[in-house]
Image: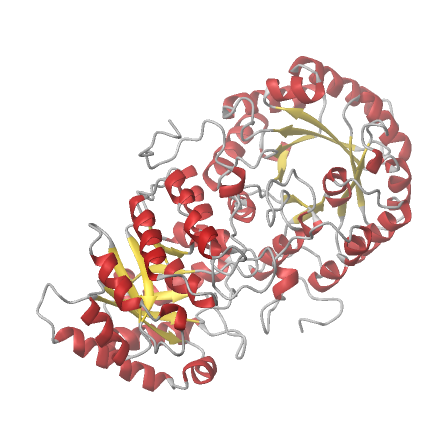
Length: 315
Length: 315
């Protein structure tokens, strides 16, 4: 039994940081994450460079990350135009977000649900036009699934309906994203089951949780207990719309990995090596706070991880 | 269905802070916590004043807190001498810690398990000598139950054996304390069940978790799911041996209350009023970091707590 940790730091983490991390530094960071055992990394977003200068080198990053054996290279795309770029660069996985709150969708993307679903269909068409074996995995991400700062609560039935619509548009899978940090352990279990009822278990295996109100790991535990197997998180908790000092927005990968490994649930990730990879962020962003408890406290004495350490540090 | 939140900030929180909080300020803080709906507060520790000057006024605090209707006034005692003082001051609940790691017990209290158990028996004798109706509730707290920085892992069988010994010595109840932040959701469930097998479910209803490695709320969720109903936590996450900047040692009461209330599990606590009580700490300790995510992010839009707000702020 194990889980897949999908590292989103190079995309969701970096996109909220102003100082540009040099391309070579991003590549070195991704190399070290992969060497630590991370097998899926969202490396960037195919948005116009003027909108997100930090991620302007996403195509280069994808090309580099593709050279790492065994790594699933994921990229976010806002539309079919971005998907075409992602396909050209060679992304293995393409994620298109659809905001469950239509107000949020209009305010942030200036698009109705129907318009985003049309983009999803266009992306699916692009993918279908590729030769089999070269088609990236296509995920529709249900953002603001647990509520929105404009609309508040989003009914699970609405999320389930949009999940169905995304699958019908041609997604291989949907994911749930707690963009606003509104989820709690009870709503996590309820929403997963509601979406499963609509699209089946195989069509929803992953969740993207934030830690805005401190419940990130508790929500991840709840999702794991229900049967979710893929968890997005960000090294050092970078990104995810942080609200407060000391408060990271994204779940901290190091703490999430520690939780699972301590529970005997393998992540395939060497915690020592993962923590060591923080150095790339410390170097690139000397003024940016790096979050995480496990990296500061260290693992417990005689800790036995589920994933054997490559370096024998826990032996 | 609800849970009992036992606020330990005035004891476990304050004991690690050097600047002395004036007695009147402590009383005002406790008043506001109680007014917010907190029904159990560990208000201090009956240790020699020269060891812990911050808690030298514990007897006064107990006497004041006793005047608050409906509040269970709890106090920590290291030995029978302290228990006599706690009884004299009028504590409703007395907690005596026993460190499950004997190395830790010897290093910190200079006492073997046998010596601590003898103190427990002496405390029980003091209590039995009181007229019925005036006897405080007596809890033996199994500290370092999830492991110790000197010994590492403590076998659940050992913890269960010590739980039995404490009950035999005359405790009304035992509690589990993750003094070192070593617990994980799986070990929480395992240890609770092991102790229940030894002493029965009624003899273990509470848990004291730390957030040292970021797993505090996930561990609380795991304990709740197994059937634990009393949770220690500290306002603003004060105390609990913090390791790192941004890392609180104790679970943050505000975040814990938010988690349960959002799940529909009543705490009886008004979250707005609870968060407002942080001002006492901000005033007393302008240089001390106050932790917590919910207080910074605010509750979700159209949030419906399980406990109706007295002020209608969530209505």
